[in-house]
Amino acid sequence: MGMAKNGFQLLIIVFLGLCGACKPWGTNMQIRDYFEPEYVQLIRAIEGNNEGKARQLVADGLTLNVHGNEGITPLFWLIMGKNNAAVKMALELGADPDFRAGNGRHLVPTLAGGNDDELLELLLKAGGDPNATDLDGKPSIFRAIGHDRWAQIKLLLKYGADPNLTDRSNKNSAHYAAILNKFDMVAYLIEQGADHRNRNAAGGDIAWLIHDRLTDELMNPEYPAYEWALKVKKMLIGRGVEFPPPSPKTVRERWALENE
Image (tube, rainbow, N blue to C red; front, side):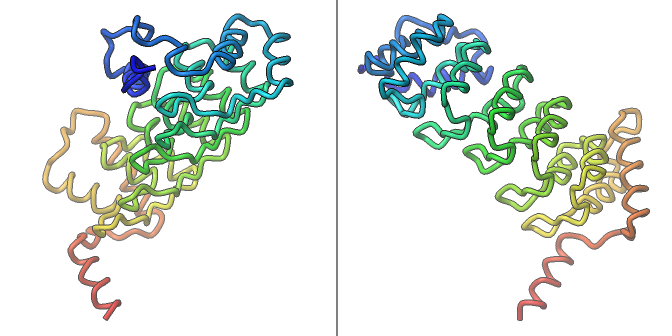
């Protein structure tokens, strides 16, 4: 199975759209390079919509929650084949949408930010964790925000995503959207419960971002983001935030005094 070396990572890159000219099903990337023969048989039965055979193989003791070469799982393989019917069958046969690949990669944040809302909802309907994080510690909703996937943001929230879950620098979803100048999303996420007072590890918050970018003219007034920044500022003032807000440096100094 030497041909599979690094192949799973290449498949993931292709699947995420980072290598658009590549084909995921090249001659060096065959299912037999990743799975033992009995699992090849099971996966092919699912791909071929042979539910009876697939159910029999599962009844005989095979599980879809297993790692093949390089840590790939049958569900990852089926999802990369972009066969939603096969994915649905696998989930019905017991594939766990929260079963991570060998490297820790989770399917929900892998799909979030992509262009297949239906596939993402299949996982969420089957119990996939809407708060699962990617390998960088970012919650799934951050990927949807970063790729302007409004439908996925709403979908993740519908299935229980916590808008106040933070990344490794302590930013919540609204704060992350503000970093990206996506103030229309900031407004929506605050309305959905994201805490506008959230501060990152450096002491910054949404109010400071808006103040800094408006004061230093870092945003073009002709772009929609500028108008939305003003709307969010008004929203924050209505929630008791004073402008100008304290700078991150001032906040860090206050933290230092409090910890003495």
